[in-house]
Length: 424
Image (tube, rainbow, N blue to C red; front, side, top):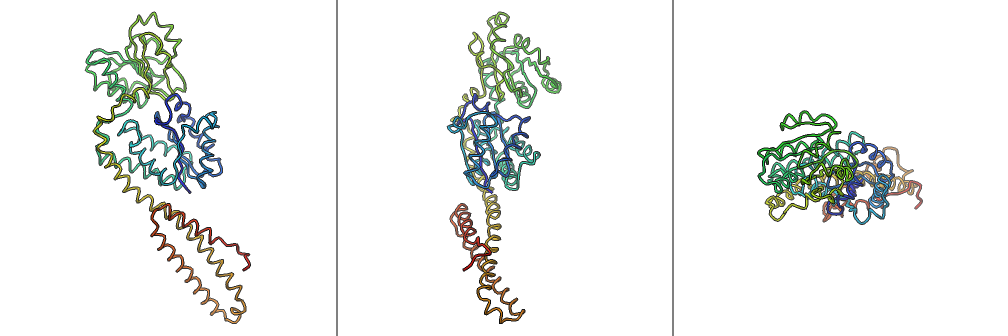
């Protein structure tokens, strides 16, 4: 089995494309089931966040697996394969493993050190495991990735400042409104990101008035940050009464459209409205940007405001990479054994066939032996086979890389695949 990852992220595709390839929690079980019907795919995990969609699979053939995953994405999201090829990246074997470890450690995030990705990797793994979509290889590599993510966060300062898309959004609001008091903010949605946003708003603003509009269950959030609550259906009335509208829901489409804001234009009285869309797929129609005094910011817009050259956390990257390297060594040692030991067992089976065919060829000689002598001869040949296996194992350790070790092992296994009816 080989690990393969096929995906897109903020480096290869903007939010308008990422939202089309997004896998919500509701559709993941169905997606995982379909994915695992492909012949070369033996297990899968889907990691879908605001900044990336990555499909990790355990495959018997990397080339076939890559084509099958692309076909799955194309079929599931009704997007032609030729539209995917320019934006999709593929990594396999060691490259795929190291990529996952960097993702879990937030080294591959747009916001270096952002803390949400570790939980997102963990959740993606447990969702796949609950759907019985994982196997031994995926279990090991994801458990190791989660371990690495925790170790990087606890032993480096890469997470200092606790940056996330929510904190960046609030920082942007702070830049726009400065120290103004009594800023009125409407949160649409009451999930994790809305909760983080509400907490950070309280930290950044001495006085801000928060209103939460949600379909259900916003009471706990409202009580914690002393916010008002309104019904989801009242969100347009909330837009009229608030300066900033921050949307973060799991809705699969726009929940605030341009034509709806156009109808409210007179009631808005020319006052500026800031719409911040933290959702994937997007919840706020970007066309609202074309209405006077209305400004819409997507996740990509917010992320572009990061000045990474001033980010002191970059100094911690080398420490994080060292942790990844150390734990990777243990993982690759385990992986090598998973491949080599079964291969050695196959080679031993081949040697048994060689032994038997050799005894058959020398039947004139063996017929002269009594049963005890025949048994002793068989034991000697078995010991000889064991000795060959030990010599192979010893020499394999001299291979310069794990890839070379696995390649040599595969060649040896294929060389010892002998048909029992072979006539020499």
